[in-house]
Image (tube, rainbow, N blue to C red; front, side, top):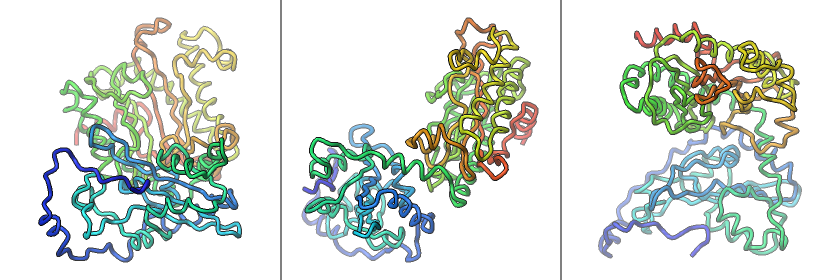
Amino acid sequence: MSHSLPAPRTGSHDLPVSPALDDFMRTAWADNPLPADIRVPSYGVTPARRARLAARFPGERLVIPAGALAVRSNDTDHRFRPHTGYAWLTGLTGEEQAGHVLVLEPDGDERHEAVLYLRPRSPRTGHEFYRDRRYGEFWVGRRPDLAEATRMTGIRCAHLDAWEKLLTGPQPPVRVLGGVDPSVDELLSTRGAFPPGRSAPAGLAAVLSELRLVKDPWETGQLQHAVDATVAGFEDVVRSLPQALQHPRGERWIEGVFDLRARLEGNGPGYSTIAAAGAHACVLHWIRNDGPLDRDRLLLLDAGVETDSLYTADITRTLPLSGRFSPVQRSVYELVLAAQEAGIAALRPGARFRDFHMAAMRIIAEGLHEWGVLSMSADEALDADNGLYRRYTLCSSGHMLGMDVHDCAQARANTYLDGRLEVGQVLTVEPGLYLQPDDETLPRSLRGIGVRIEDDLVITADGARLMSSALPRTADDIEEWMATLLDS
């Protein structure tokens, strides 16, 4: 049995297939080729991406797996999403990419040829197409054949079986994107792709992240589409609030409404939707979404649509479920908004990545001092040896955004966290205050209030453009926006 192609998966409740039925299933099928002009949407930009990556590793074989299916329960797999590096280099983003491998093969003159090893369409002369629940066309849908995949991507495509055969005979130095597909890691190790006692050389993940830090115009357009679809999803949520307020799991109602928009407009949500009502908003990554909604409390909605090309938005709004902020809620909201405004004002080419966070945190620390929550000055609180303000805000105020919601996370610190902003980078600015319901350092009126305001921005020559400007941010504008949607 090939290492690359596992045995067909059949279910314990499958009906037996007689020889007569098997013979009948293999006959009388019409051709149904894909359109000759079909191309992946990023067809025009992926060759340059592969060339940039290959140039960083002359003479080395680069192995970039799509990833493997993961079992959710018994014979049911999780929905598959290809690894971002694989999708960025090939343009292939579909669920049928599981198990595929992109190889950039050195050709001897410091150049590389891209070869895509994939599982092609099952021939109707076999039985996989109708019997294999995991890969059969009748069970999970059609895959391209090798010629179709080559036309779609502009990459020479070979059968996945040939990937194992590639690892015979003399081998060039190999660098793999490890931890993505265990079978690929194991095969490279057992075939002696690395010197005895040594693991795969590092660096490929970091370089892939660093190459993606600056977005080209096509990518920025994809991100804007994701943002626009996300804005529509937030509008859907506000319109649904009367029904959601009546349900004992109103947070789930909110999640379902947004995720419906995400599936209609793209691949789905780019990450698990956070629909956090009341004190749940003080849990930074609340995704249980199993609580009710209270008209007297706030809803923190952190959600993003992922496009079919796998670029995701990441937006947060904190909304008064009554349609109006109470005086205390407005006070907290306006402090967070002022912090976000300070962070946005710090965005410009050449600024340190960490500058916008510190600008936002100064406003937070000053506000907490004015409220009497922090007895010390903002300067004291912001000192690296102190940081007590973080009890109430905890996390960073933003991150790079792209095909991953926390994009380019494997980049080295000097190019990202300790680096400087460049034109074309896309990032979030998202300060928050999370005033825990059991925090005795807070006055009771503030306990259980969580507010985050998050927007997506692209760095421009003279600052930054707010990509999510279609969603209101001020307290007054949010109240007016909600009233308009609820009356429509």
